[in-house]
View 1 (cartoon, chains in turn cyan, yellow):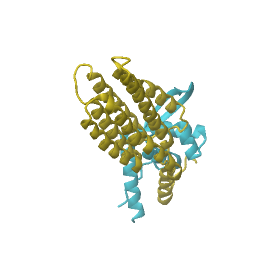
View 2 (cartoon, one colour):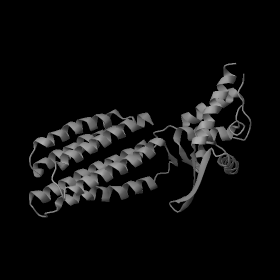
View 3 (cartoon, helix red, strand yellow):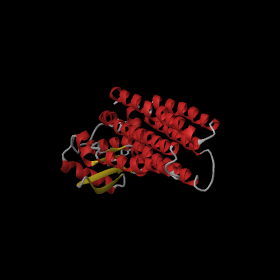
View 4 (cartoon, helix red, strand yellow):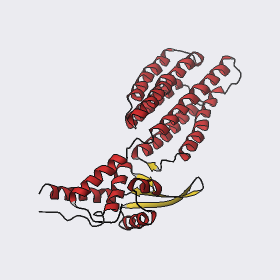
Length: 94
Length: 194
């Protein structure tokens, strides 16, 4: 029996963002952009979707007088990622 | 990278690649420099206190030890603000809060010597070593863990020295073996690990 893959995470960029944040906890927008090689516009749309789903927390602040957007994974995001990996396993072990 | 659907194998590959990219000890060099700042400032301030006590120049010279957090905290804050890494890992956050906790405990214990008498340098030395052992475990650095253990042994010898003036050189040695030497060994190993 295959488990359903979470549609919010089953997208290349959103999965990349969550996978990054799973291992580091918190990162700024520029770092995520660098690691995922996504464009700023696309990334901010996907970050907003993850934020709306409650999987990440977005904080806007200033660092060295420059605006800085920080993304932090939430416990809900961690649970969703774990469930996603579990669901993936059921497909891989078919 | 785009907003496209992946197949199962691609999803797993992507997760593995992202986790590989986000190595958790990226801040190792900054954390290491911060440790060294605390080590050198502690040694310097302790030596100043020792000299003042030796010449009996100032009766509340022990209060000068409070200079350690007063100097190191702003430097730590400055070093963290200059960090362009853009990442705060669970390890970084743990190190930050553990440092605050230990500094508050050490300062409180230091201040309480104003109202009661106890082997303060032994307790402070031991706390510094426990702090370093915890840092070593978090940073996965054997030199820092072992430095902390050796420092804890050295700090125990403070119990056998009766007066504070004679204790201070050994107290300084605690900082050297538990912070400065392991800090430099850790820094040397960073380029191979990161």
